[in-house]
Amino acid sequence: MMRLQKFLAQAGIASRRQGEELIKAGKIKINGKITTELGTKIDEGIDAVEFQGKALNLKSSRIYIALNKPTGYICSIDKTQGKSILDLVKIKERLYPVGRLDKDSSGLILLTNDGEFANQITHPRYHSSKEYFVVLNQDLRQEDIKKLERGMMIGGKKLQPVKVVMSKNKSARIILHEGINRQIRRMLGRLGYNVVKLKRIRIGKLELGNLPEGKWREIKKENVL
Image (cartoon, rainbow, N blue to C red; front, top):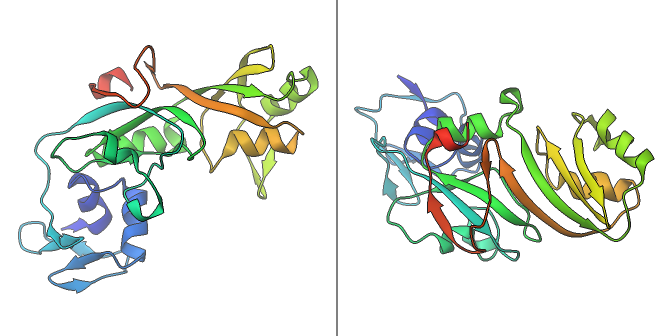
């Protein structure tokens, strides 16, 4: 027996946490019936699981893709919210984004059908670092760098400290080890800055490098972890 969200991850639909959201939203059927119970267990050899009207099977091959996301695209499998980065990756396999970059941000985003890999990249306990290049409306003050590196309160939550590895000419490079929604924009906004440009340039060991905007390439998970 296997938990439903684990099955969804191994079937290449979503990470475990994203799978939980699909279950709660009533988007998954087991043997023809919608289920919204997160604790549901299935027998993958007997039970029929469906998503968007298609039967799901466990994946035997894993795919890992690095994409240079342009601004204006969303990182979601739900294309009703706007242009999705999935439209930029033309392959037959069903993939999903690992984590998020908001619509107004650009840079490195990963896509995969490996739920365990996605969990290792996105879950805070694995401490997978992400590095961003940020352009601001003014120079980042030294006292504000110290506030960022001590850890800030956002939305009633104490965030992990970030590392500012460069700050000059109204720009900065910032390293995160967690990634709450629009974290950098919210932190800098709290300190009185406007973010003019935000680009992710590294995830784990993998750097964006010279990958053109809107283009993608296949990688190995060892390139990241």
